[in-house]
Amino acid sequence: QVQLVESGGGLVQAGGSLRLSCLASGGIFSFLALAWHRQAPGNQRGLVARITSTGSTQYADSVKGRFTISRDNAKNTVYLQMNSLNPEDTGVYYCNTAWRTGNYWGQGTQVTVSS
Image 1 (cartoon, rainbow, N blue to C red):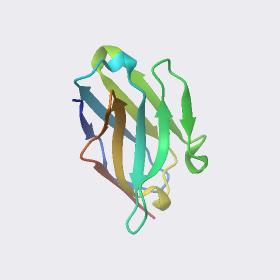
Image 2 (tube, one colour):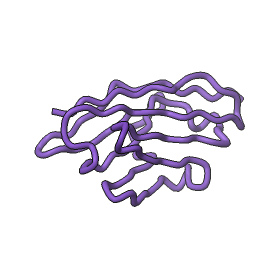
Image 3 (cartoon, rainbow, N blue to C red):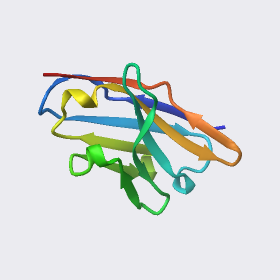
């Protein structure tokens, strides 16, 4: 079992920044690949960024150059630094990982970007 707890969401004006955190417990954190997904109202949940156990990253085209995913294995935490936010970034952001046969999600954190 892996538990994921997100934090750091909130209301920000367009052009602003936020940093999301996801604290993981259970599993072996350094072995985990972790991802951030976003679900906007009326839309399906989609991948925003992913980081492997070795630190390789990938991003959705819509966030490249603005968002940075990183991890701190000593703190069992994955981060999503979000800069130059725009209203299209609004949604619930979920942390996600897979461990053994399970696929795990956090409860989500709301990000709202006002224009």
